[in-house]
Image 1 (cartoon, helix red, strand yellow):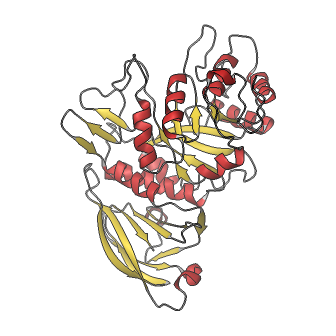
Image 2 (cartoon, helix red, strand yellow; image 1 turned 90 degrees about the vertical axis):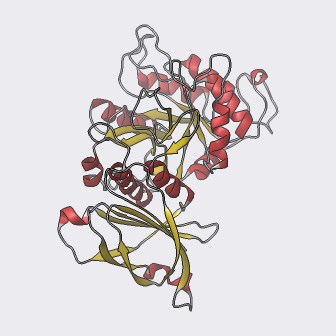
Image 3 (cartoon, one colour; image 1 turned 180 degrees about the vertical axis):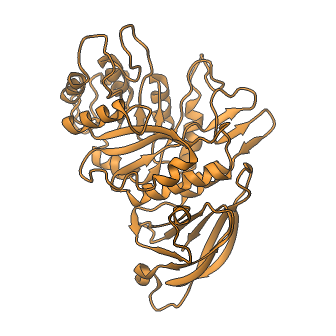
Length: 399
């Protein structure tokens, strides 16, 4: 056992390099409101190399792109990524034991290994699935919290946005005061349109949400303008509920042409080229231009029908460190919409100036296109100004 109190003490310190202690608050503050990159590959997937982990290379790129933390799924990847990036790591182990229905960090052995490897957050199955050792999930969580009181425990509510696993996961989170719950769901474009208030009713004082996997799945699983814009709607909802949703990560990210075992993916590649999709560009903009303070803003249009208004969304955030303001707007209609944007809550940002210079990023195209690129231009903005949202578009204004 190590006894140096200036270090982050792990139960088996001899097996890992020492690292400076990162507190729960520091980790949660670092990831709050940010998009997390998941770097993991399992056997039979193109990026899995048996001889050694190469996920640290993916994590290096993710760090360069600005992610505040990495999610990964094996001991060797936790060690390699931690050594390469120094970022907080959300670690889990996928292993199937006889008698266990769950396979995500199912026993204390995996928890011990993850903590010893340097995981800052341990992710595990918090559902009521059968456990082969005869313990209940309540007992399992209690064992973890007793042995590692300072580790962040991230449970899972199963692969759905409702149902028995979801309800059990959240009930256990409340009973055991679990730090964070990892939600996964893949839904139709319509679900995202009509569930923009999904997190509005969540307990503001309960476990934080890590939306670890999500995507809009249309028939045939395309990755196109429609699905990307539906995900942009959801991101706007998560920004509005930033006190509940601590972080999110899209899944999956990469796939090689001809070796795809899951669709859709964000980026496709072959031996000659890399082919980012429109979803990649939307998520990249949202990730690069995010804030930690939600700002009230209003987009007024001459259209009151509910089904139409639900396809027009605005979200405004501010970065408290830089003072930068980012306005995101989504138009899921097949025609341009003229609107008036009210930013009167930002009068302090404008000061005596009647207008300010801003940078506009726009992604627009036919609903079924997949290779659309963002376009940039300079504009002037006022506390209240007119803006026409192009058909099927995502607009981002940085002030």
